[in-house]
Image (cartoon, rainbow, N blue to C red; front, side, top):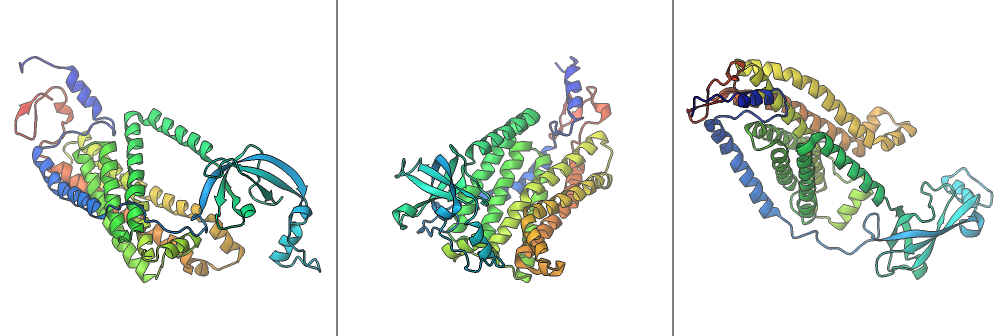
Length: 444
């Protein structure tokens, strides 16, 4: 039984070790027990946290009709005609024609040019089939087209002629097409891993919408909710995408340590810099509707959740680098593994930090442009709470990302070096017996 040669099997195993995304080499039973002793209590704590904090749904409230807190329906532009703006606008032009003020310029402009009078039909809700008229100014940033789908706001307490108004265009179809293209590209390139990545993305979104957001609205501590929710997302996403292996478990540990560091630093500097988390109309509306929500805690929760995605990428990459180095040279000790892998990590750090800063700068570009128009100094801009929030968010997240590289690399080097079975070396790939975790000899 044991004397019959099996040449194809060793060749297949040796080939799988060449690729960074191949199956991880098996580790000893002792090492699996050590990792399980750390991760099982952590996973249990996450499950308990989900059970204790799980909300019964978002609490109801009386709609204010402000911002996003409006009742909306779908509509469609059924006709469009051009009319003289003076015939449809009630704005009064200043008697002197003064245009030195924004109000004066707006009044004068509203009396000039051709406006669009759109007839809009409500296509959903109790008033389905009802039509109303919407006037679109010639300089309005959003122009309507005949046959275009729109989102309409409904104000039941307003006079009948003013109950409906167009608030936005319907972007559902192009967004769905883009999402479909994204899914196809991920599956074509990633194959089975791409499918698992999409499933984990859906699960992560479900945790966010079904647990994190409603739990915060019900008054639970945003920081605790974010930690529990982010931990659940981390466990599901990493193990689903990369398999239940020692390699993935080390990445989970590295991510967890980095998240704790981000939470501590974020809590310290958000409090020290007196950041309230209430800086714009949206956060003001949230605070007005649910005054019991800790807005600074909500800001910290956003920092933790926002850092999680990039942390996963860094920790998985570093862990895989250590494992591949060990398989390429089984004689490397933990120090040599760490020194080799940290060189890869330094390149990753440079690109990731730059990515974070540019991502936040791109999102805040209109705000930065506004400060530039006002000719504010760099110190004044940085000291404003709106910009200071983004600076703290960026720097705290970047510190956690930078720290995750040496932490995860050191953990991976120690774990893979402590593995008593060890990965098969080049000399063992030709069918030589290797040691398993149970001390028995088997064919490679």
